[in-house]
Length: 354
Ligand code: FES
Ligand SMILES: [Fe+2]
Image (cartoon, rainbow, N blue to C red; front, top):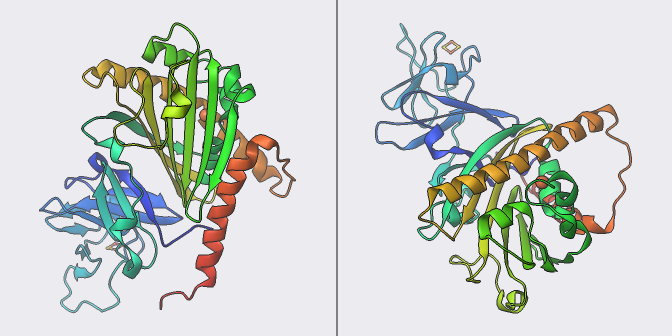
């Protein structure tokens, strides 16, 4: 079950072109995207209304998309506007069209009632194209449900065990002060590791020689967005007192390193997802090799998670009813998943559009 009336990330902006239709399954619905002659995005149901051939295998003809099988053409609203060798086009000849918006290098799609699609509700990922930040990201196709990824990001105690070679050390699980803040709209896990050694990636990026004060602010906003404000400063510089607001546009703590880890986890099916992520930094922004190094380190770490999700999903499928044990470190992920499920229940109880 998914939240339908919500914006999701469907693609990176560069993936959708005017040359070739681009298909992706989102929330169990096949969607085809392309750009029209003005470069505007179009997103349609990726199933020809004639014999259900995928439109993504067809071609873009001007502002239209043409099905490869028998040549039906659709306009950007999803209306069929040409049937070869036939003048009359039935009113039922159409496919669904989706509201789409391009923002922060991502293509955002509204999967529910189009009348409710308000671009002001798109979650802020400004660090992807902010002049004071540099970011690089990619997409993983994960053979595991999207909730597994959200749970993973909301409980960073796993860094100690899964990511020893990159962003984890003993302090991330054993020595963090953890607080969870919940509002009606989001859940934020605040973790501080005071006067502890920096993990390998941080030493590489920040050149730390001694212990650091390290923070991880993890924000979950339903249905599937997890943004992390993370960083470290030499210990004793007063980082915990100085860092008042998470997710400041410009960063707050000079002298250390500050990063944003940005995640949008779009369900593909009940058991698979498209995991869009990027790592952004606000130090050494004139050095592309730093952006690349951070990307590579996080990429290596996230591939370790990827393996975890796929193996979890396989075992869950063997016995979906097996009970799960909760431990103290799970409080953030439990709050996050509860908020998501509550939203889905509320939506399903509310009257559906005709
Ligand atoms: S299936 Fe698309 S034109 Fe026939
Ligand atoms: Fe991880």
